Length: 332
Image 1 (cartoon, rainbow, N blue to C red):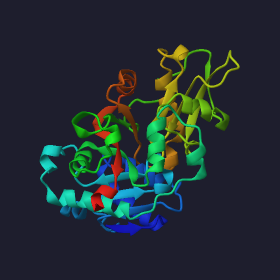
Image 2 (cartoon, rainbow, N blue to C red):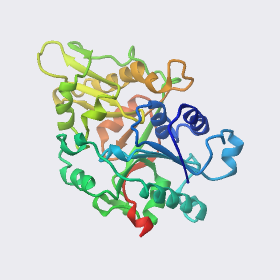
Image 3 (tube, rainbow, N blue to C red):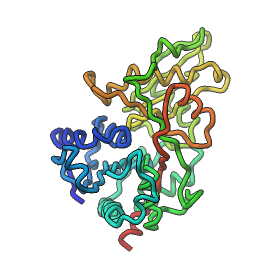
């Protein structure tokens, strides 16, 4: 496993390597496009970034990860691998010793990196997930892997690397649908999905971040929220705060989409998502981007949010997870 600095030439090569495998590589692809990198961020890869042709990609198994341990307790790692595709199931790859070795080597490399948290991470108000939040901060060996494809999650599980605090069914934590949206091809436009009368779009202010945190069980820090593309909806007849909002996460996924209860059932969530993609997806793709994939991760039990994604023309590409990996286990 080699370590690479986040220099523009290197990023360009890795993006070229990942692009042929979209949308399965979308989380890592978007995270590298986002460009908001801390000094501690780096890429760990089993393949040279110059191996950019499809023929080279197909010649060997590979794994690539963006690692930033200073973001804890938020997602510290986004990754992509050669075996994550439409044909991939765990039954197909579970006995592949090369894949198990690559995953173990990645975790071993992560274990060698020091963990860091900013003062804001330790003092910022946080959600109802207090116990997991504080436990993560106090345990340097715990690393949060985000949007991990089902096949790779099963490999990590079978290597015995998961922290037991969030394990649910089949030895894995809560499962998410990875919804993908072909924004470049589908009839997704704000002309089709409009706000109800009396509602208008506006800018979500930093002073509203406290209510954002209060409405989610996932820890959100101001230092991250202020960097993210975002949108809000206001009731023009009221002087209150926002009635709905959404962000694009650091990996470009639809994040923290929320509609206050009084305003639900009016198509607000769909309208907000579409407007956010139209106005902010180019933060990741660039103005001349030739691909417009959008994505969202929705808990499999969340019927309302899954229905919103389906109504927007999305397709479930695969199941993914947020994994709390105890990296000391791989070297113990």
